[in-house]
Length: 250
Image (cartoon, rainbow, N blue to C red):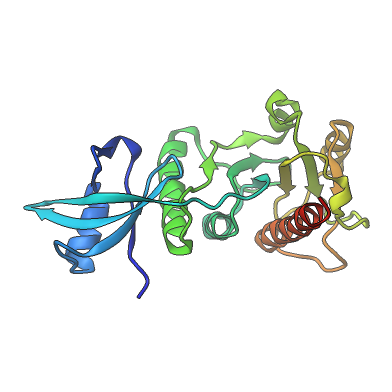
């Protein structure tokens, strides 16, 4: 039987004992009806996982006798910068990108996106997005969940110095050339996906000037959320094959 998994903030783990936050404690005790002595897995926000035994203390839930779970790491770091979409569609991207092992997600504000989140609602929206990501990480048995940025203007992404060492890819609906792993020269990869309205040609031109490779996803017109998951899958698949072949020939 698969062990149940729960998220615990790093600062709630001390001396080999983890204190579950209220929401996770309620789910364990009142929804799943688990009790003292049951074995569970937990993971923290530093990407570390443990197994341990449940201990109920009145309204609080602890996991003790923690044993660290060996972590599995990808040979590359993948960041997804995806244009903001309608809530349900963007949340679907967050969930599936987490399941596919993306390391960081950047919501993008692009020229042709119809979605604009008022400044006063950003914090609440980000908290909801974080919950979706954590739940997806629990479901797919990741010990680390993706870092989530606040929405960023595409022009600011192009100018960001921190991505200068990345291999940068923009998938454009009008590009004919398919992605090839030979275009990747770094173990850090940034993948950009546009909105439902597509990329403005001026954005694509500026991305190319900033060193982005411009690639297509085939002859079909994909929904933006479908394009995001297709792009992640294609890039990961080709990079894993490239990494495997490299290790085999060493």
